Amino acid sequence: MRNLLNQVGNIASIIAVIVFVSGIILTGIGIYELVLTFKPESFHTADSSATIIAIGLLKSLDMFLIALVFFIFSVGVYTLFSNSRNNKRILDKVPEWLMINSFIKLKVILWETILTTFLVSYLAGIAEKKFSGEEITVQSLIIPAAIVMLSISMVFLKKES
Figure 1 (cartoon, rainbow, N blue to C red):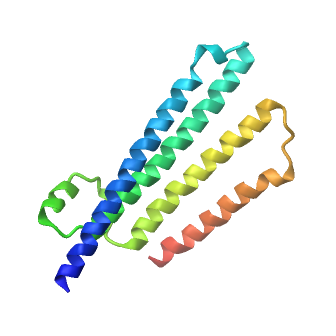
Figure 2: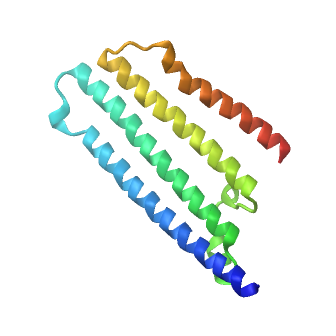
Figure 3: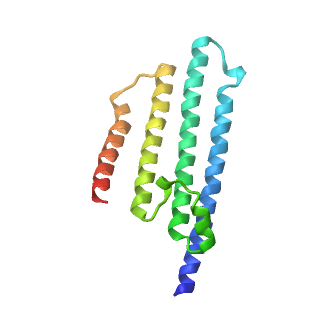
């Protein structure tokens, strides 16, 4: 039985490393988008350059937040399934708010991060619509309504834990 638990811990550690590497790749994509935001060829007029910079910054911030979700998930999985004393030394360097000792705590931290990511993603999309001259309709309020409902659900989840 102990051997089976060690194997599950090893598999979870591999998953955590793969997710962490995915977060690094997403961070690289965010940096790439940030660099493209300030590319001189895309500046035509002062108004359009401000628009391009605003939308580009929001999109790169969104990518960084998605990468943050991946990093938090990988550290959470590693923390929950880590069973070696050597691994505990590594985890001593993790900030206090990221010391995850249950799936509920991991879920709450991820939920908060994902909600922030949804909000920034929505803002980037709505800014792009506004700056391109598209009409903002009532259907554009579906995502903010979903964010509010998820936030209310998170409040109830936090009260239970």
